[in-house]
Image (cartoon, rainbow, N blue to C red; front, side, top):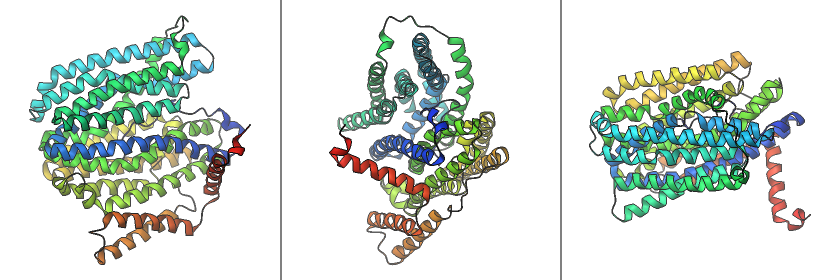
Amino acid sequence: MPSLAPPPLPEQRTHEPASVGRTDSDQLIRKTARGGGIAFAGNVLDKGIRFPLEILLARVLGAGDYGAYALGYGLAIIGSELSMLGLRSGVVRFGALYQGTGDLERVKGTLRSAFAIATLSSVLAGGVLFVLAKTISDVFDMPGLVNVLRVFAFAFPFYVVTLMAGQAALAFHAVTVQVVVTNICRPLAHVILVATLFLLGFGLLGAVSGFLASCAISAAIGLHLLRRVRPDMASRVRPTYEIGKLMRFSLPVLFVGVSYALLGQTDRIMLGYFKASSDLGIYSAAAVISQQAGVITYSFGTIFSPIISDLYHRNESDDLDRLYKTVTRWIVSLNLLILLLIILFARQIMGVFGTEFVAGWPVLVLLSLVSLIGYSVGGALVGFMLRMSGKQDIELANAAVMLLANIVLNLWLIPRYGILGAALATGFSFSLINAARIVEVYKLLRMHPFGTNYHKPFIAGAAVVLMFVLLYATGVMTPYWIACMVVLCVLYVGVLYLLGAEPEDKIVWEAIRRRVRNRQDPESVCP
């Protein structure tokens, strides 16, 4: 299903767009590509670590225990989002704001109050989950869920501190620190610890204990690196606290984050209630795979968001429109290949998780097809366009409608069709809201994502499908499916190359070529 990581929230800027006003649209394209590449690299590392972890969990635990783990993890994510009270957005806004004005006292007060409130809130939320663990496990009729939830409850404060440290680093433009803490340290520690505990004979509890320990390690590293970014935070400067102002901004933002957290877990929670944990495990594996394409959208959207805000508020509609079309085409071009491969090789990919997961291949096809259609009709950036142009109230209403539709459809379809019903509910609700967003952006901003060159990735995609049919007919695909995937990737890139690069693509390629040449030539970087 489409990626549901919470998008950058209003005024949560990861890059300072101040220089945008002094540059033309070609420079904006370079900046977006460069920033998107950095964010993409961090997210790819994250996914590259987490995806093997999911395979390890599924193969060792089996569908039943993997389902219990997925349910506990989903409830923990929702609880953690609630316990942060929107402060990870608040710390970015006010941290960056006060740093820009040189107000060290308020920077220090913002950090201290945000971390203190979020930590206390997460301890209380974890305590509530610990106490209610038995009741929740009875509701889902999963006796083994009790201890899983209690271990996740202990992880709440560490998980929250990890995310807060990463966001605070973004406030001071230390993007590398944010990537190291949230995209590398925690998932890497998680996979190493889980693998070690599995080798020692621990099963389901080993998986959740690995999550707890990885959160504790990454929280410590995050605080250490944040202190190195801002060593003056340990100085004797008296902090100025503006807790009321901080909370007035953060609490409304909380509802957007919680809405997206709920959207990401509704189908799994309801599957856990209506069906066996093995069904939930199979569905969760399919959902994890289908979400891999979302890293591209989130990476470019994160960088594009502050530029949208800056151009919109300076009435630079021509530059915004051009960049909107260009970035959408990049996202579509990359995601189209990924999702086509997932759809065409769904049975083989699900088999990587274990033989009992192969039955979930129709779910994987349906979830990926929904994402493919959503990206193909220009739905990649419409949510970012609404939020960053000051239409966040409309986007919050969209999220609320989509959440309600998702709940109603899951209640209706899961009892009748099981895991396929959950996929249908998710697919319909996302398709509905994507269509609404596209119309809203066009009506409110008079912009659409379809440029004259929008068709090129679809021609390349059609070539991939035709080659797949040929490989399947000749019997080559089944024994050599990985090699066939490589052949299809080369074909897709080759067709795009033959169709010709656009001026915007040439700008980006030339910038990359210069950077590589400079790194290879020591004299070019000498002072």
